[in-house]
Length: 113
Length: 221
Ligand SMILES: Nc1nc2c(ncn2[C@@H]2O[C@H](COP(=O)(O)OP(=O)(O)OP(=O)(O)O)[C@@H](O)[C@H]2O)c(=O)[nH]1
Ligand SMILES: [Mg+2]
Ligand SMILES: [Zn+2]
Ligand SMILES: [Zn+2]
Image (cartoon, rainbow over all chains, first blue to last red; front, side, top):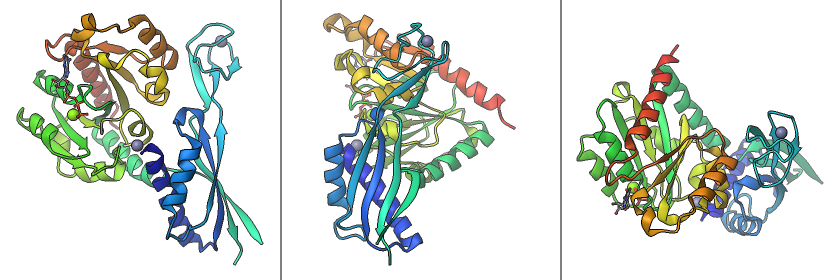
């Protein structure tokens, strides 16, 4: 359900660009998805392939790049990638999320007309 | 020949425009908007009923449900201005429908507008509605492991509510783990324990909302 609504959002955004930019056939869509987004790539790819049927994007492939989590400690500046939001160096909870929240259409590959 | 068009555009870009417009207007009006997110049946509507009974807060609610207007009726009975949105299968609310719903609310008389999102711990957390912040609601029977299982919601919420605390004696809810995991994911978020049946903890929760509503008003202009 989750992946389906995301696929819907991706496809409607792309269909609009497709029309605005007068693209030719879209061969591939590259998506960047952060680890915190709880996306199951195979399910999203499948949902995408279902949603694009009978649209201008029909046949386009979805390629998902998964972006691992990355935190930065605001106390000591340390960067780490483990699941835990606690700084492994100084034990502080005071941190920012550098990566892992992405949900971004990175690029599309289109046939030149 | 194929060409590659680099976009680097958020998937939700279209809807984010609506969210930004809502946020803009609320900032100008000094209206606080709170997006309440939790599983089906975790006690969101009951919490809002109790909140409404607390004097001194002018509030309205936008109710998101797959179907029926039962939750809206419950709140309307208490005299709360409320709009029901039926998503007809959609598992979350989006900013464009929220903007439309806001048109039928007396916005200039309000301190706070609550959005009760569709019962679901996943997608509602991902769609910006133009709110000031999200609140993650977890009911004790769901178990203490939920924050780590649904990290996006618990990381992005500004406050965490543990509801149905009256049931704790009947459960093996690991309070230490819950507190620890919540703090790991979101060290800045206050955690409120509420029992909506007796009203225990409602005072603190309403106090928090009142404070945020006041801050929002003070920041106008
Ligand atoms: N014991 C106990 N029961 C509660 C509490 N809060 C809510 N309930 C009960 O939990 C059930 C669901 O409550 P609702 O407030 O309708 O839950 P909801 O999150 O709005 O549900 P949906 O909108 O359907 O997702 C009802 O039977 C409530 O009476 C609480 O603090 N303690
Ligand atoms: Mg409800
Ligand atoms: Zn969903
Ligand atoms: Zn550190």
